[in-house]
Image (cartoon, rainbow, N blue to C red; front, side, top):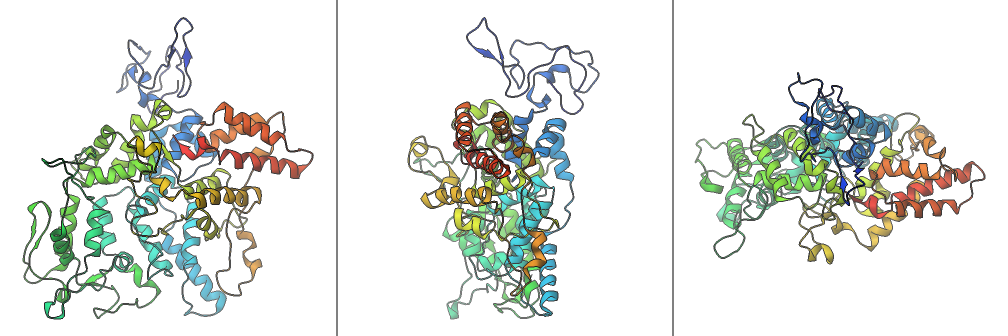
Length: 602
């Protein structure tokens, strides 16, 4: 056994790694040593001088994962990874990998990338007033995620983008600056404090426009004018506390009649709607102007114009009252409202259950939710809302890391189709000659109906409590990702695999402006590096190729039966020349990535 961090003295024996079991032939059962299985075992060490005794040998936190366990961990902690990432985790361990990821600085921002594309178009068209296009946003997102190494930050931001939702299905559907600047909030604060995200999002013009409180005026009964309630409702229902009172373990509180206790009612929505009045464009001098001043208006936080802010007290949740401020101070009212929701007992379990569902399993146990929510409530230093501590708690929990969890049929989740797409491009080292990537992801969206910030509504692509009809519903379980799994997206994914893998067309590269010379971006067309896989496509080594693919994308979860089916299928194809070898290799990838053991990530 290899030990993590400082727990690396020479031990008297070596224990098996995760996923390796030692059979005891005199018994009918299998005994697994380590990973917390230490009943009746005493361990001694030649070195007891460290802070932790040699008992860590038998504990889960002492393990460096083997490659399968490393791949499994990375499938939870990233949007995609390659063999080098797997080897890195196997060498340094999960905790050290997380430490490195959390301290890794961002190389650039999405906003800077969008600005770069816009400048390129202005120069290419000799038009300094050229309007921006939403394609800049798509290209910027893909470029960042193919080149940047902050894999954990990217995974957290993507999850948060499905919790605090804006969408291109809106009035600002062609505004790349809006989406880039908004997504940068999630990337910048992925390991920060959730209250900061709530504050920055509340003042962002994209959210103000999307949920219709930008230019939301105070009440004027004579004109039958009252504050817009849209953001007030969704801020509570979706971004903070949910519909029903929760225990810290995520279970719903019931009243004396056995009915769920609502967290808020229509009166509460009305009171909160008064708070989000008086906010308008940050670069406008007049209230009520509906359109942005220019392309960059979305990167400036909305300003509060107190003349249009609802005066007077506001009665919020848990008997908290915003005072009747004189003079009116809308920013102070907003800060009080955000603090009121941030401090609500539901905030921790509501957000943490969602994040566990995105990272690890659709049906987390009450104990799992309780432990993570408790970290949200207090990270050990008295700080509430520390996302770094929350993410650590989710990924390092024994339930997430345990080998046994992978054998539980209620554990895990259906991989989101867009994450599958990112994963295959990372796994097989998507690259271009220039290092610049173009991909507006149009094809993947048409096939599987998912790509960043393109959900059909503020309720995301799928809801966390979705129950597909059948065994999942009958068992009282949920499977959120199945809400976008239907005949169209199932066949779309398989057809997508054919295009991306078999036809060697992994990305959608288009002009950035009308009439752009295609030769100018020939070096931005993507391809995969399959050299390692191609070397194993002959009949003699085919089983090694499938084992490699199993490790690389499926965390070692393919059964021997599935591997055998894939091997026998690939053997039906000739291997007489380089084209045959390439087809065999790509067919093997195609079959592995359409297998049920891959699609359900345990």
